[in-house]
Image 1 (cartoon, rainbow, N blue to C red):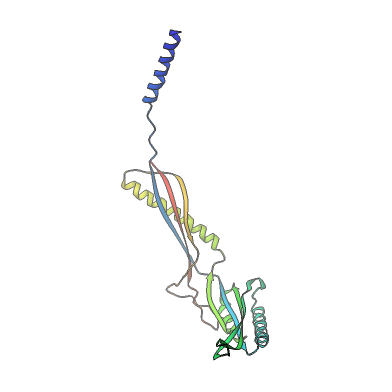
Image 2 (cartoon, rainbow, N blue to C red):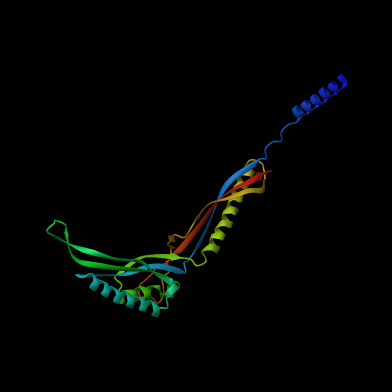
Length: 234
């Protein structure tokens, strides 16, 4: 019995000393940096907002007139080759028009009605944009909103910006590592911080839509990507 107890005590002490003698491995050295990528390209499409506003003493008259003009506007889009899928009604409203006079109850007096029909249009041939704007006004459109230029290959350009962002992160990491007398190792993690979709950016030499009645400066669009990368440090 005593022999068994002695053997157990010796084994326990051996395991205990072994655990004390074992040292934890140091955490691997890493370097964490951010990188940015930027791609610019001239837009090849545009989204415009146009519409028709009509007024009359009676709502049905204002609506009837509005329908006639909007039909002419749609005919203009047909003649200009704008696909049906690239036009969409974005807003339609019928609202009272008030005069400065007051009725018997003291409330503003309604002296007519206003009908508004707004249409969003995607133009895929920018050479025709200026001429289309002129044609829309001639067809009766009395409201032209903002023009947003876009890129049909936006996803591919965004991927290019991502690649540039990772390269930028590695270049920055190598700069820091060299200054510290170390070398950059493998990539341990990558996380995307943000992707900024196109915003208008005018170039020094503005591009003008040729053969267009309305001069249009399309400039360039910009896509940016930001990433956070962790590298091993050797």
